Image (cartoon, rainbow, N blue to C red; front, side):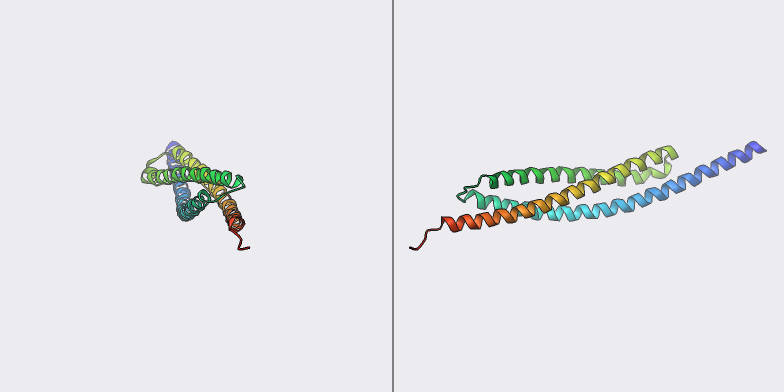
Amino acid sequence: MILIFSMALMASCGDNEKENLSREFDDLMTENDSIESVATEFENIHQEMLQTHNELKQQLEGAQLEDSTLLESMAEHEAILKNHEAMRAGHKKMMEGHKELKQNFGQLSSDEMKAQITKMREHHDEMMSDHETMRSDHEKMRDEHDEIRKNLIDSNRENQPTGS
């Protein structure tokens, strides 16, 4: 009799644990949706940054530059933008993987659920850290783009023939 009661108690505890893990997973999926929304915002910002970069690059190609650091900055920006593209592609795969996990999550054991939740948390932390890096890079590039524009304007003024 005690054995039957103990087995029933263990089974109900296991179900309760799985319910808690399922709720935790659902919370992570909500967080995943939020991260995906931020990722979409970064996609738009990236396209703007890329367009600005290409416009400035064209302007620099036709300019007579005395300061070669401008070209170095543009080359650095190009590498940063490529790195951001790789980060975003990796994020997209992680988020798709998280959505795929949801399909079979309820059939997993508690230990499997815990392992997947732990991995999802790690992915979320990585993506949020990458978002901060991208945000910082965007600010730096915007400032440098402004400086490059200023230098181009100054260079154009210096290279214009004077009417004397």
